[in-house]
Length: 511
Image 1 (spheres, rainbow, N blue to C red):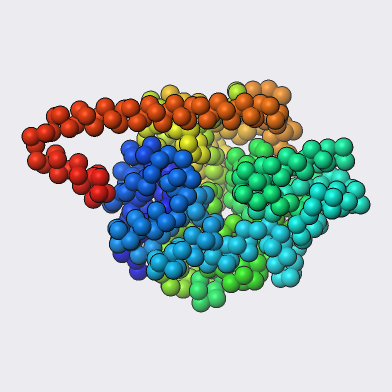
Image 2: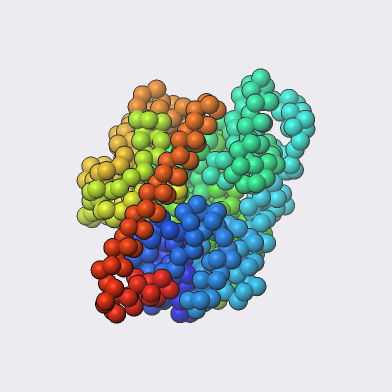
């Protein structure tokens, strides 16, 4: 087993991995940008090292910096969490070349699954059902011809896509040219690749994903499904496990398909196969996420399996400690993602200092968080504050616990998505469990928290405003740090212990 693991991430997922390591007797190493110096994951780790300015492209996304810290700290392995470098095949390759274990699949597996066109080709060969559409990248003309021949509605997608970026729904041919241009532009800015393909749009779709775990000995199991159909602009908002209206037969078929998909690419580690399920209960492969998912906690709650610990053990060469027949579903779990967002203002991020932070607690409640009272939510990263996870003996009890937890969860100083979650969990359609991915657009649009798409002009104005805010925040933080450094220097000039402490902190040996 590893002696020391570096977590190449920040926020709640970094803290989550550190907790797993601590329980396993493994020391942890944190990395942090200048603006994250006082972040919870930095305080939580055994060691912490600076890696550069706040923009992720200058810190958390530079693999060479991460590797340099790992070697300096003597880390055996690197856990990437999710986001940032977690699905960068070249980073996994770099770890292998430098003799540091990457806790995740091999780089070539990430590339084959990260490219949606290649993934569709691979799944088709493996006999996994895919959404009808193309299995190659298309020029504008070829894409237009395909849509005209097949007919709308269709979904235009980025080949290198993920997280809802570079996706456009086209219901009328008159929308096609503009949708192609916007999808290419967003794909280029988000992934550096403007390649597109197209799928038929599945009417009344439900977004169901299957968690898989696989070891290097060829064993692979699935940990059942999660319902991820409560979405806003293709971003998950609330997830449930197990799924609603999933029969044992459908569960078995989807589980078998997910395992077949993993074995087709010789997958090792934790991963997720995402499927669309239509109103006839036919299912289609959507994509494979080659990392731990944000919503992994609800699967842990219903199975009793610690997914992060299992990832670490598998990466160390151990076989899976269970077989498919050993696994079963116990109760029901729901996750609400608490974001620093203003739902009354088109869900614009709400950065700032958290003046009061009092998370919900009590029976059946788990809160994974990367903040604390007095912490600052910056404009530089994803605005997630916490993941509120509840468990109940059945769905009804889980919903009642979620209602209570949302009422008890107190965050002041910033706006959060908690009021919006309360609207969702009080809605009769959600309570009945008969919803699909159109739930928010159909039932919660038109009032406060209107999820209607922004125009191009408003998106550009918001982007400029965020950029200006980021620059201002960075300059303010630099000024504060300089002032604090000057005060510390004057107050400890004659104190050798304080001088030692400051030097050790700069080296990452003392916090």
